[in-house]
Structure formats: C-alpha cells, structure tokens
Image (cartoon, rainbow over all chains, first blue to last red; front, side, top):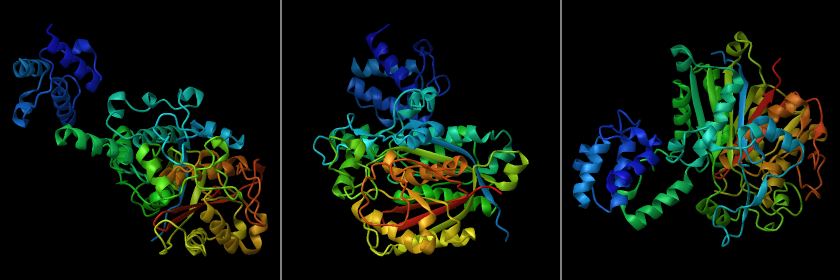
Length: 78
Length: 422
C-alpha cells in the first residue's frame, strides 16, 4: 500500500468515522461510506490541505471512490 | 376560536451543575455553584476569567459526554450549542414517553429551539481560517453548523418531527419566548406536540470578549468565582456566563390526557413586551418587565396574589436586579410579602438564550416538589424589600402557580406563568 493511499485512508476514516477496513479501492464515499454531498466537499478540502494541491471543482466531482482519490492524488503529487 | 390547553410532559437539561434534570435540580437545592475558572479558552487577557461550566463525564453520573448524544462525525460540523440542544431534547422526549412512530404523529409534532448568539465561536474560527488560508478552506459545514435554527433542524431529523420547525432569537429572553411561542402553536392547533427551549455555548474567546466589552460580566471574583453570581447582593458586579440547554416537551392537554401522560404543569400565561429604551440597559422604571408580567397574568386569568413563586431574571448586574425587583413589587402590591422569589442564576450563571427554558424547568420542579430554590451568595441585599428572595437555602412551600421572567438585550421581555394541572 502506497504512502499516499495510507494518508488518504486516514483522512477518510477521520472525517467519515468509518472503519479503515471499509475504505477499499472501490468504496464510494456516498454509497458505501455514509458521506453526503457536503461531506464529500469537505473531504476534497482535506485532501488539498494534506497534499498541498488544488483540486478544481470539475476534478473534485470525478472523485467518487477511495480509488479515485488515490489515483488523482498520485498523479497530482507525483 | 377556542384556544387549546397546553401542558409540559417532558423536560431535559444539560447545564452547569449537571446533565439531567434531577442532577441539576438536586445541586441547585444543595446550594452549589457551577462557576469556575475557565481553563480551556484563552482568557488571561480578559477582565472576566470565569464562567459556570457543564461538568464533563457520563450521563449515568449526571455529567455530560457529547458522544452519548451525537455522533463524533456530526459533532465536528456544529457549534456546541447544537450538541447541547440534542442532549436536552433527547432527555425531554424520553421523559415524555412519546415515540413519533406514525406519519400522523410525526406531522403533528414540531420543534422550536432558539439561541441568543448561536455559533459565534465557530464564526470566529472560520473567520481566522478565511483570513489565514483563503476561501477554499472554509468548511461546507460552516454555515449549517452555525445557524441558530439548525438546533431545531438537527432535533427534527433525529426524532422525525415533521410539524412546525421554527426558532427564536431574542437574546436572553430566547428560551422563554421559545416555550411561549411553541405553546401558542399548540393552543392554535398547528401542532399537538412541540419540543421547545433554548441552547447556548458562549464560553469561547470571542463571546467572552464581547460580553466583557459590554461591561455586563462580573469581573471581581477571579480568585473565588463560585461567589461571583450574587443577584440582589450589595457586592454583585455583573453576570456570570453559563452554558447549556433546557428543552421541554409541550403537548395539547387532551392529547396528553388521552395517553395518560405525566403533566408537570400547564402553560397558562405568556406575556411579551418591549422596553423601547436602550439596546442593553433596562428602562430605569422597569415598565417593560412590569407590562410583560401583567400581560402574562392577564392571559392566565389570575391575580398577583395567586403567584406562589417567581423565578426572577435576576442576572446579578448592578442595574437589572433592582429594576426587576421594583417592577415585581409594583405588580404584586399588597401580595408582595407572601411570594417567594429567587434567582437560580446564582447557581448556574446566565445561560443567555437557554436561561428562560432552564428556568421554566426549575419553576416546574419547584411546583412539583413544593420547594423554592435558593438565591445563593445573597448575603446582604442592596435594597430593603418585603419580598422573600430565598437567600442561601431553599424554602418549602406548597406552590401551585409560578411565574418566570426573562429580559434581553434590545429591550425584549418575556414572562411565563405556569400552574399545576387541575
């Protein structure tokens, strides 16, 4: 597991108050992890803060799952 | 149009001196003070460094643990006043025995919870974030977690209350106005049940600084804060901030009777008035408070001599206490010598928007138990009065009719009159 995935998982666990085991590649923030649309906005803000990147709104809308977030951030940071 | 009778069938409190109605009440009757030095907020550069605080611990021990009332994930999104409201509302609903299981029960039940200043602490924090990090770091929960009516919103979602969803913002009269207005919604037939009261979380840096600036807070008791709130005493020097929430379940009398509910009392009178004098100072002649009380007793259809106990606004400020005392004396006339009047703010401090609702609950408990709670720290009254201000120790008395006053910045006054259900 990459360092980026670990950091993303930690944020998701903290913000959505879910077990780390549930935060898997295909886990949808809204459908599987109990987030609402505002939670999702806040998650993206937390990713921006953690990785010191800016995630434009249209890109943010494409981040629906844990896997989406890790792959976007891997590209953005890498 | 015939007005329906409205009774109180559930009560909940989180406040200085405890979490849970019976714990707080027992501590008040024991003459305890909830005041202490503030150790979790930067106050070393403020003139007032103490407040009445909610004791932290578990509900089973009469103390407050936020996790027992709201998920940690949700707590993060809101100001504490909303968490306090959730705790007090859940207690009150449980106490009432109501379940809101059917669609009709849900649609006939509403919420009316207010706050004096709401999420000032969170607004301050978000302002700092905006200034230091820019708009992209302002949380999407900043607005919904700070809005005063979101206490009503959260409670309605938790308990599925789909009737009137409303809120009140009238400074330190909020809690009394919330109960009075909610009672009217039931009396007029808009709902059968209303969850009503106030909530406040003012022990944060910006609210403390603001109330220090208004010169409203007590400042002379940094070394002995438990003596700071001393309504009517000659050494009083301002109010002591309190925090928490008081919530009641109000119910149509026939609705309560049909299900065999326990009734703590009936809301028989509600009076409102404006001073139209000054933004923070009460009018010196006390006429606003007088007219509020007179309206409430007229609505109740009683005469002043019927009042057994008055829970005063009595904040421990230099100006306010004697003005209220004068207005009560004027109202009662010859009956002044037989009433008991105390300020429970001496024990729990001033809960601002929650004050009126926690004090309505204390008034109902005084009636239930036949005992008037004391005004602690009242060593030497600043003026002579024939009214028994219940200094230091509670007084036993058969209490059938109670009156509770709340006066707020902006010159807003509210009075509730409650009586035993006959």
